[in-house]
Length: 98
Image (cartoon, rainbow, N blue to C red):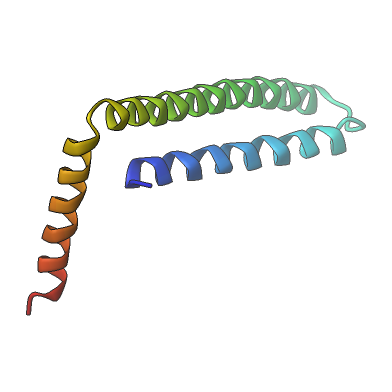
């Protein structure tokens, strides 16, 4: 997994956690009366829907990226092995360097 995939996975996880916490907050605050409370619930609901859409788009992009990488590796297996070997060699040299 590269850094972008790790960051995407972390972002998706964080968004899911925020949505879950927000839904719990909405549920717990349903008995609170008043215009401010109602306005807060409406805004929070809109923000949650936006976060859900963003999370869904990120998941779709991550899946598309993984499929594209898989296609590229399957179409060019020897070049992929060569690139992986070269990167491994380069990283090995840089790590063992004093």
